[in-house]
Image 1 (cartoon, helix red, strand yellow):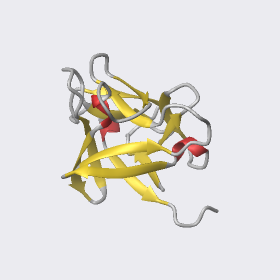
Image 2: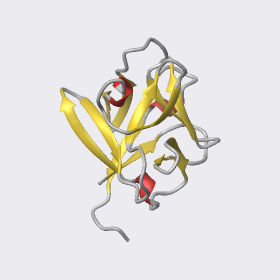
Image 3: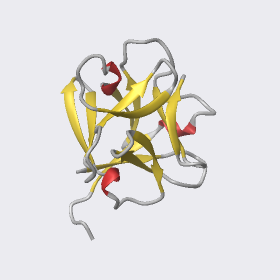
Length: 143
């Protein structure tokens, strides 16, 4: 089980939260609720899918919607859900950027907006998009 943690510069929520009941994604201030647990699968060289391990039935796969810059959950990773594949680029020190590999042109980089707890896609990882840097935390013992 993996937690995906936004390293945005604004104080606020940081844990990526899949809301399987309605297919949305946001940020929470702490891990624990079922939507903050993710199964990270490498499906190619530094290409990943992320499956939300939430307890509530619904869509589960992190899906970048490049046409409108939003992020949600898809029911699977097969076409037409091409936004469910993410290229991870290591920045060193445990920091990563996640680029949506969807087929439709548009913004591509997973961007956590820690100030208001929302998530979307940014056009680049350059300032002012500080929420495009992420870490992966593995919890071995659920306290």
